[in-house]
Length: 343
Image (tube, rainbow, N blue to C red; front, side, top):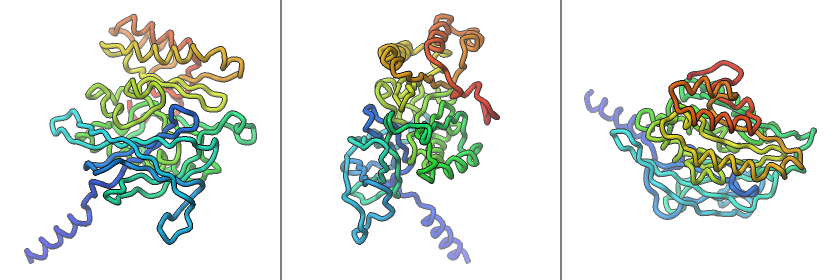
């Protein structure tokens, strides 16, 4: 009887064993160039060779040798070991690659993995960034904005979004998530963040997932947020805290609103986002291009000043100036419409 229990325990352990070389938490984001798309994922073990993305034109369901899949394109990426700041010092390996020279509005299928270990993700697909001429009343620009989503608390939300994303005809151009991920990315030595990225993969692997920090990303100087995501342009130099991108007639500026309420204010990052905005303002005005600011904190100057009590007044004034310079839309975690999941 004891032997039977041991065999059952071994069988259960084998069935639930995790392939540490397998890619997980796949998500995409707009690249620095309009014809780029960045892909990010992680593994729990270091793989030999370079991480690789294979991609194909159109929607492809089978890439086996017996299939009639179109000609494959391959890009190699980079890997960085990320050590959690907690006492366990858990390690995960973050892989990044950029798909270049994509046709505007075209659909591509892709998978990520490692040729040396022959471990690959399933096939995903995405629509490359559309140009301005491809956006019309018949095919309008479509953005989804979310904030404050937890691993356990928000499963139903992402199931609804995944259902909409599954059909390329109803798929939004991008998903904006303005802070508070997983509750929290660093919880349980980062394992909660790993599970969270698995939760959002059915959405974020298909739609550009554009992010900014919230107060729940503060642990270890925002390190989990900085390491797990890949935002365009200046995002690479600011831990994904400050960046901007164009999408059709819209210009989006993302910034870390939480930094304004910390003792050390990330002034340079705000300056980068603000200069980028100012530099292109005349050209965008000529094209009647809108501006949209994305951050987890308040949307108005009054809110900034109210929240800044006990904080540095010069920091509050700086954020208020940013709020005045751009149109801050509904993508704000602290004052968005609808029910808050958690603060």
